[in-house]
Length: 238
Image (tube, rainbow, N blue to C red; front, side):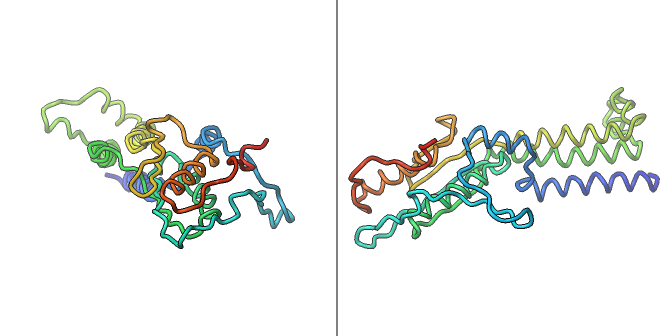
């Protein structure tokens, strides 16, 4: 393999490693638009400061008033199990902030929703196979000949168009890996009880819906006093 070949292999290997370690933090504009559309995340704040000190300030809501707990009882933990690769970490952060405004003492945990084991193994296999094929294309070798498959036409084309073939394999493999690891889940547990499932309902709850479900569960468990009136927040106001 020539020096240029080694450089190209190292370049694609570095890209693959960066994709593995930063996958959950890299969300492009399409993912952000999808998040805005799916979660109905509207701008509830206004901007303050100069361009150098641009701060988003959210309007005050009724969630900010902490809810008193009867008898100083311990609240059951709230757990979010969501698809990190889908860009749902932003929703988890927002919902956690809203819940803590009303229940400061509640424990809130978040975790990546586990996909099927075979999908994880297959995604790892694709990553390894991708690097092996890129190395084969750059070096000009034919591993299929040793296995008795001759010299496939696709590999012949790849050897003649190394840069295009490597880029194509890299992008297609990453797309398949992300597809395998994306569950689309956003599950919410209060204690051991599942109070919301995006996999079953097909959507995530609105902030007011989530708070209403939590309040109802706490009222049934005798943790808070029953509400005297209807439940309303500024999220319902337009």
